Each structure stands twice: as C-alpha cells, then as structure tokens.
Length: 330
Image (cartoon, rainbow, N blue to C red):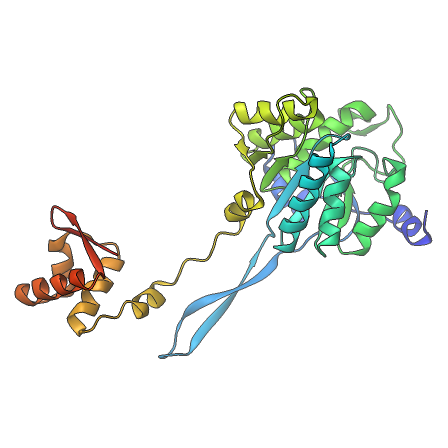
C-alpha cells in the first residue's frame, strides 16, 4: 500500500448525508445512512451558464446555475464475459466524458471496470464500500481506490473505521460482511439518477441494487444478453419485468443530457418569410397554433391578406395543410 493512501486510511472524513450537495439525495431514501465516512472529495454541484434574456439586438445576459452532476451507477457480475466487460467500460467511458459521475462498488468484475472506464475518460467516479472505511475490499483494489481519490473522486462507506465483524456501528445495525454488501447497494442506487445493470446471474447483488433503484424512483436500464448465457439471465429478467433495455449509450445520454431546445426568440428569428405577413404567420404557427382561426387572430391580419399569404407559404413549401383548416410548419 502506498504511503499516500496509508495517509488517507488513517485520516478519513465524515459527514451526515444532508451536509453535502452530492449526498443530500440520500435523505430521501427509505433507510438513510446516519453518517458517511470517506476519502477524497465529494463531487460538487457544477456551474451551468444559461441565457437570462436580451438587453439589445445582440447583447445577452447570462445567469449561473449550480446543479448536481448527473450520476450513473454501473453494476454487474464479478465474473463478466468479454462482451460484458467491453460494454461496461464503454458505457462508463462515454458517460464520464459527457460529464456524468460514475458510481459503483469497487468489487471485482463490472464494478472495477466501470471505475476504470471513468478514470480513463478523465471523469469522476465514486466507490461505495460494503466494508468499514478502513478496510478496502477486495484488498487488490487498494490501488484503484487510491487512483479514484487522487483524480478527484471519493471512496465512501457508512461503516466507520475500526468496526469488526459483529460490532454495532449504529443502533440496530451490526456489521456482517454478507449483509452489509447488500445494504450498501441502496446507497449506490440512492446516489444515482440512473442505474445500469450490465451482466447479472439470476441471483445477483446487482439485482438487489436494481430493486433499490426501482423503490427509490430511479431509472433502471439493463443490457440485454444471450439467452443461453447464465450471466445474461438477470438482465433479461429485469427487461421482462419492465427495465429499459440499453441498446446504446445514447439511450442513457439522451435521458441525462437532452439536446438543448432552441430558445423561442431564436426560433422566431429563423422563421422569416418573403413578406412581413408571411413572417408573422410562420411565427404564429411555430408558437404552437394550428387552427386557421387562431393563427388569423394571432397575426391580426386582414382576412384576405392572411389567406393570400398562407396560400403562398403552402406553394413555397413552408407550411402544409393538415385538413379541417389546420396548418403546420413543413
């Protein structure tokens, strides 16, 4: 173990979930952790700059909005196929490149692959342990935990340092390795906007994470797999039960990072006709109006001029008739 990480092991930090922007979402889950212990840095809210209005023809005011980073949990079997490993790494890499924080459990297999994919993308990743904070498990992943911390992520646990098997760490909770790994899954899903299960057997801790996610109102994606492979059965069963099949990274990216809608003012500027009358008709239709009577009322045009310009727009291919005196942009 490196000297650097030994220092972190001896001096972990602690917070209540409500004391950090990133962990505040855990206050809404069924069994909120009383305390979190961690090394490294909690992901912080990020500044988004958006339009706040116009002060002139071209000048624009901007406003800064702090938002919690989009967060994705990627979980799965400890013994992935080559296909599962490839998919997990690609998902973590691509989503981290887009700015998502990747959360997983530091375990063998899909978990560690997801962490490494995020790190290779230069992104931020968070590992949630099922063990006490001073017991990195598996021990082989101490180096991975150190890398997560050194690159701006964190390693966390709800179990304090020095806790032994059978010790009570909060009233009513006793540390037992088998049950604590299942209990920590609610934290993995609770921190996330989306949970992705890459590969899982019929009985898998990953399915436990998915169950927590559904209970918490998180979106669950599952990667479909070969129906003859044992490690695909869990994901295929999730899809059968209503999870969203993940066919490409865009399925998740479009949910988390939807393409920004054009501002109404920008749309209006783009809708220019050959005459002033054509322009006001185009802009009225673009605002959501479709009935001829409504468009006429909105434009305040003379009925004859309105009919003439609307006909010309149809001839030019700018609008189309939907029937029943309804119109749409073409």
